Image (cartoon, rainbow, N blue to C red; front, side, top):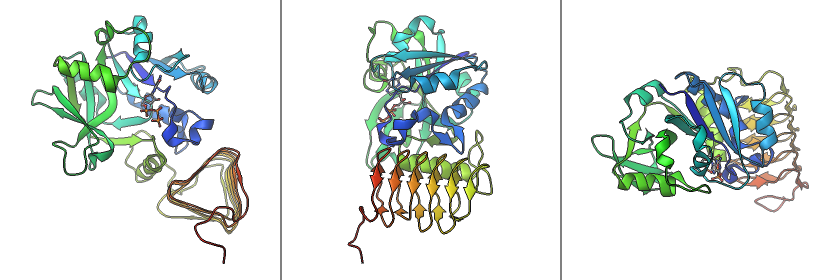
Length: 346
Ligand code: GTP
């Protein structure tokens, strides 16, 4: 039985910036639910009673506010004053760890059968959960032998060149002894701990079936909502009517899904399609927002947004601006009318 889990939520979250300027990645809402809540729901399925949240100092108060008053599971915060990377946080809390426990990356959740993973994992000091993906080129592929021992890793193999489609799903079953001999300080699972275990034949890998949600980049954060809206998640549901209670929507909601947070306003004459509009944001008449993310209290004032554009909190996007191709607008910026476009004004 596994009683304890460590959640790694102290990364910088640069790939999903500027949202992570305002909110830590693990607390970004998915259909209104802080992402980490999905992990707590998954861990509850195997009876985890105690969670250590490994955090940095940059969003410490947000994490404290979130963890305050939680009784099930019991949550402890382990605060790092220098970046410890993915395995260093475990070395830092080694004295508080059970003999065997779960470690979860804070920005992915694999909705598989966790009990089966815990019960059937090979008897090795560390076992990775693996998930099969269609396109391996963005991931570290994990090659295992017939007994579930990891033989090697292949970093981001181009499509069609990989011997397997299994990639590291970001959830591990780990024994405390794995950290014996490592000094306190920054340490990476991926760069150091796992390769060393592979050399000794001590790393296992188990492929798990299930939806894999990832919020690590803007396109993945959007894809997570797409999957949730399609009913693929058992951990979180989205309002079938497209709307979240508390949003004020007089404009058009198009496409197969939208997440509009409480306090957000879509004014008449604005159109929003397959996008995330976060709390307090306003989409004014003449705006067209497609496949994009509008941050907290930002204003889109008659602009066109598409293709994974991300608008930071409290930014203002002026009339006739055209933002696309993954453009990111820093929190609080103001783009004056027509100041960013793909073509000269007509
Ligand atoms: P990017 O900057 O966008 O790559 O994000 P990230 O900093 O979160 O890095 P990455 O996604 O590779 O990290 C995987 C997981 O490890 C995430 O859940 C991070 O929060 C976590 N993580 C990464 N670095 C640290 C760290 O120094 N300390 C702690 N506690 N967690 C970390």
